[in-house]
Length: 184
Image 1 (cartoon, rainbow, N blue to C red):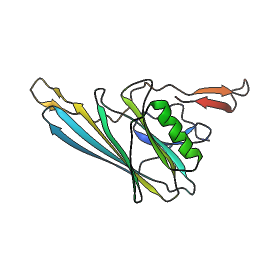
Image 2 (cartoon, rainbow, N blue to C red; image 1 turned 45 degrees about the vertical axis):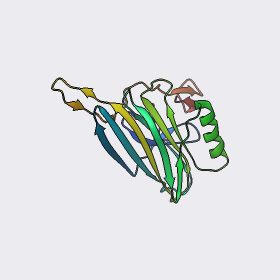
Image 3 (cartoon, rainbow, N blue to C red; image 1 turned 30 degrees about the vertical axis):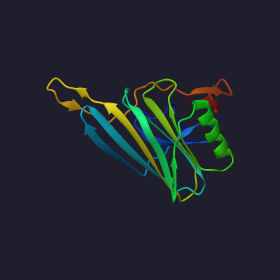
Image 4 (cartoon, rainbow, N blue to C red; image 1 turned 45 degrees about the horizontal axis):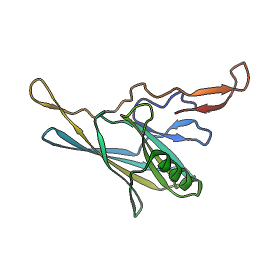
């Protein structure tokens, strides 16, 4: 059994098992496009997943965005199907995502962390065996003017340690097998 005591700090995808544990699941590829106009950067990130397993998977990708970034587009492409996200209240979106997964449908969810407004998680749920998914996330962010009047852009790639550590409830006093865990 592979346990990760906290969500990985380097941006990568993780598989979310039914028991709440996470296991590393690398992305197939990531592409980033950047356009700068005046003092504003528009960033388009495309995350490509492929399920090489023999069962449907749920992948969770946790990543940072600049603190002043505003997400302006989120879409997913699987096969010939393109899904463009709608902004919804967090609880409503989570319930719709969970309902879709429990009924065997494919679903995608982008959420801002409750602990930090610059940490996001992208859930790709019920990706069928052999299928690929391409997720497109677009955001804008203001660029800071440097002392030499130049502009600086930094693509965040590492999470600061703001994510809570898993809480394990052990079944015996000898630190046996965890009974359950909590990640968020």
